[in-house]
Image (cartoon, rainbow, N blue to C red; front, side):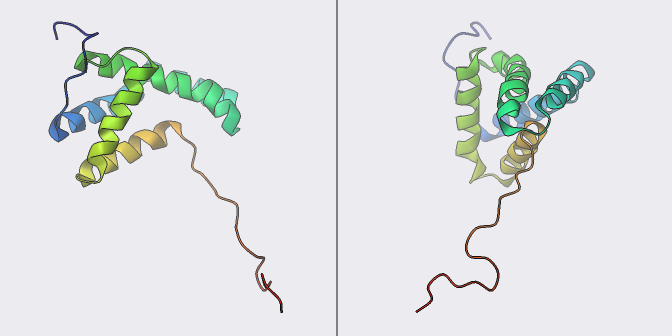
Length: 126
């Protein structure tokens, strides 16, 4: 690319798949795997600490890959890439799958607390 700071070219769905696969592969590089493991250890499964320790490392790893495709090498570039991927998810199941794999690399599995009345309970007793 002539200028990495230029507006990112609108990637086609096929190009987005390639970039997503490269980003996922970057997370498995030994030095990045170590960085992510250290960040997860520091976070101790605490969501606030995940945002503090894990998300910045994950963002840096993504930045290193996507800058070659014209995205800025900052948080804004990662957000633009994420929005582009999101725009293709509904149309392309492979992109949706790759996007899910990427998110699973740095977001902990969410366990939602139960909502609604307790089992056997009634909301409105009249």
